[in-house]
Length: 421
Image 1: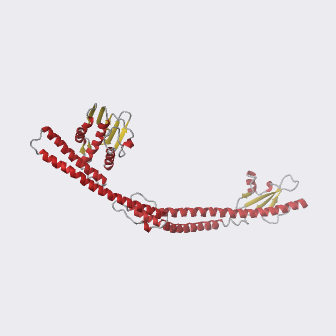
Image 2: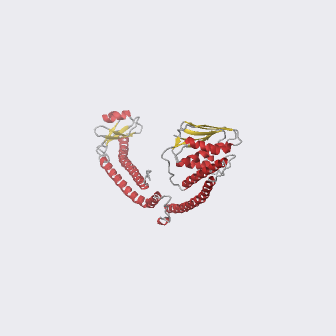
Image 3: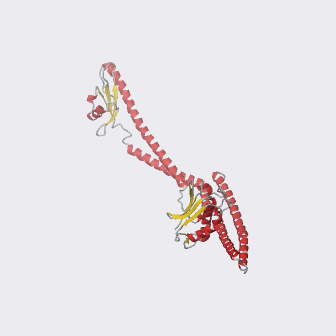
């Protein structure tokens, strides 16, 4: 295969690794939040106990007592706070945890005595009591290494699971990648497990069998059709050659005989081209691009019978140097179908064949209809005497020889065009 293939196994491993990394990151975040919250709650509980004792002391003696913990102080107002604490508190009076300078860290709690107009403030400078902050680097390192270990384990587990899960699918993908129409494998579904991959393998196995049978029938048909079509053509050619040697044949009869011989040769080339397309073989292309005008003039003469009794004018404005790099039979089939369709569906007016903007355009005064519909096999236009296969064959020829065929139309005209040199 030439297209880039994204390995499903690598995708699964990447998904496991990303999932493990996200889980490890969230776990580390939760751990950090938890330990900081526990530490803060511990200091808040100590301040709560000290505040209750200070309120009892104030109610009994009318004054604050020295706190039991040396890292705590009691203040009648924020004016007596340490300078680094006071500066931040004045700016943010609602904060109860403040980082000071020189590594100091404060926890605050207001203490409101009964009957007092303003509260006192209990301040705990806990820089020496902090447990998490001094160990923060170690905690982060532990979390990082733990997360890395989890990711590695997840990658290994993902690789094992992905290899086990995708092995049948990879085997089936390799089998499908190597399939070619002439060598379709059969009976390979038995080597796959009884799961979703097995269902897919059985479906592909059945489809492969049907395709092989279809190809065999098509080869048999093209072989038989080649024989059945070429045999009468050979008889016609032989009979016309013998008839042409008759001395008493009139001039008009000889002209008609030449038309029959030419049509037989053209039909034989057409049969060869169509059978080659049916077998999906490469049609040998001429090395030199073929002149379009001589073939076009011949086609116009051959298809002129379709215009008998119609008030239709045919104008051909095609330069002699216009060429198309396709074999002669292919160009003849292409022009015969397009010109024949234009002649058959034009009741009055004109058929104008010209070259414009690098395209040979066949314009006739007839309604186009649905351009996609008329390109489908067995879709016949109004008044058509054929089987509706002409434009479908033309489309296949253009696809094989990379010819840009377009069918466009309006209420009053239909234009068929293809690129030329």
